[in-house]
Image (cartoon, rainbow, N blue to C red; front, side, top):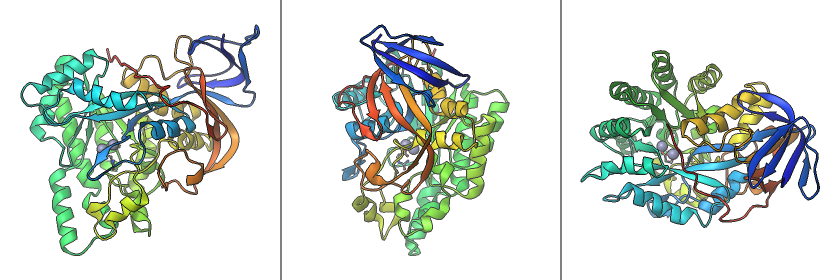
Length: 451
Ligand code: URP
Ligand code: ZN
Ligand code: ZN
C-alpha cells in the first residue's frame, strides 16, 4: 500500500464507523479495524479526526468569459482553492459557442482545464444553440461521458421556452440530465429597466429586480415541462421558498426533480444588498429574504434539497465597482469553492444537520446524480479522495487565508467550528494544514455515466 490512514472515524452519507483505510495507486483498497504497515507506506494518524469523502462541487464557473473580463479564478486557482476546502472534484460549465458542436465545446474547455486542474473535474455543457442538427450533440456528449447539460432561462445567452422544451425531449431520448437556471427573463429585464429609469441604481435593486416570485414562477414552469416530458430535472442554485414548495410537491408526486442550493443562500439574507459592499454579494438569483433561507434549511433537513454546490464565480473588487452607479453593470457571482464543505461541516458540528447529511449533500448525492461512480464515498474500489477533518479546530475565514485569486470574499469574518486539515486527491496529499501542496495538471477529467 502507498498510504494508510489510521484511527479515524469514517463518515459516509449512510454510515459512521472507526476504521483504518489503505490506499494503493490512488484507490481505496482496504477498510479494516486495523491495518498494519509493512514498511514503505505513508502512515497518517487520524485519531480524533473525521475521515470523509472529498466534496464534489457540482457548480463552478472557472475562467468564465464575462463581457470584457473573466471570472477571477482560472482552472488552476479555482481547483487549488477547492483542494484547500476539501473539494476533490469540480463540475465546471462548458458553454457552447454559437454554431459549435457540443463535443467540441467540451474539447475546447478541457484543453484549458487539463494542464491546470489541481483536482479532478468534469463538465456540464451549457446549451445555447440547437439549430442545424446541433441538438444531436446532447447524445454525442452522453456517449463520451458528459451526460449533464444546463439551460439558462435568463441572460442574453439564455434559451427560449421552445428550445428548453426541445432539450428536455432530446434528454429523454438519449438519457441525459438537464439542469436549469430558473428565473423569469422578461420580468427581470422589465424590472431592471424600470428601476434604472427611476434612478434606483444600488445593489438593493438587483434584489428587487429579481424578487422571490421571479425565481419561484420559473422553477414552477421548468418543473411543469419536466413532468410533461417525463425527464428528470436538476434545478441549480435554488434560493427561494416558492421554488422549494414546487420541488417538494413534484417529489411528493413521484417525479425525479433534484434541487441544489448554495451556501450563500443558507447563510445570508437580502439585507446584504443594503450594505456598503452590497455589490460584492451580487449574484443571480440574488440572495433572498429570511423566510426563503429558513425554507432552504427545512428542505435540507426533509431531504427535498439534494445537493449543495457553490456557483463559484468571483470577480475582483475593481470589476464589482463597475456597477457602483448601475447595479446591472455589476458582474454576477461570488466566491465559495473553498468554503462550501467547511461551511456545511461546521453546520453539522453545531448540530444544524448531521455529518452524514453534510457528506450526502456535498459528496454522495452529486456523485450519484451526475453518475460520477468512482467518487462520493469512502469505500473499497473508490478513488482515494479523502478529507481529514478536525472537529475541534476553530477557523475564521479571511481572504488572506484563502487560495483563490480573488481579492475579497463574501465569507470574510465567518467563524467556523471544525475545519479540514488534510485533503487527498486520488491518494496524493494536495492540502496540508493551511497550505496547498498539490500540483498544477494533477486533476483528471472524470467521465460520467448516468444509467
Ligand atoms: O451570479 C451568478 N450565479 N453567476 C454565474 C452564472 C450563473 O447564473 O450561474
Ligand atoms: Zn445560474
Ligand atoms: Zn452558476
